[in-house]
Length: 182
Image (cartoon, rainbow, N blue to C red; front, side):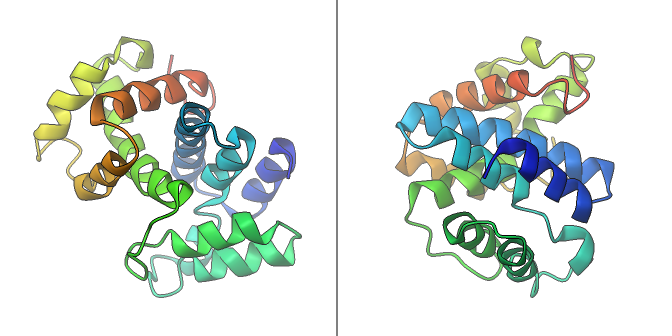
């Protein structure tokens, strides 16, 4: 699946500007992590873009989140390799993540909000966020309190946290125009 087709699909199903931003942020991080691991960066980016495609439809019903996303993607001709990761990313339904793409999505999905919050503290300039800043704010449980730190820690089975924070910041720098940061 091409990025432009994924974006069109995302826009067809997701109206919330904050969810569009979150999807772009997750995609940017997924691309960088895939490159680092020698995986298919284009596919991982698409997974990041589409992982919450059903969020508006399920309206917070976590028993349906991911399941409906899988259905939407399959109905729109998205390959099963992408649709299955989207289906399984709902950590309230699944927890047996062993594939690198699933682990990376758990971490990217959660760290994106933490790094965006760090950037907002720096006037919206994501390039001023350093891995050290992210590490410090990661330890402050009250900062970006909705960020699920245990999901971010899952990445430690693939790389150290400092490397992940660096890649995540780089990923957000790559998509800064798409997420409203400078």
